[in-house]
Image (cartoon, rainbow, N blue to C red; front, side, top):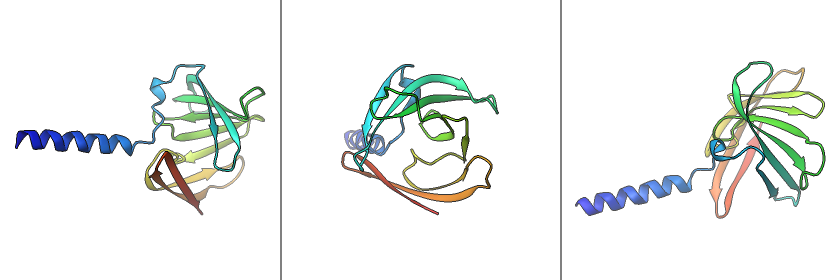
Length: 143
């Protein structure tokens, strides 16, 4: 019986880990970068900047900048996330800020709802459905 319980716990814990799509931001060293190939063929780079306060609320976030391609030019956005990689704010290169409440649901499996506030606009409510697939995850977003 004891062996069966341990075996079940090992299987259960590895199954839970396989369902985790978080970024584990606390394990990424500042200056680290990743280049991603998106399903539409576009290549983007994310470079981690470290933990920094957001200018308007002074809370501390994990921050990375995004670039088109291999990241040889100015960043398109600076993104402020929680420890799992869910974004709360995205600042474009012109200083415009998009806010997500409670966050953008990018690292949440299943259905997740959020409100996106573009600069100088009322919020728009979205639902994001994310599922794990072989080699990663896929998602759909609905208004």
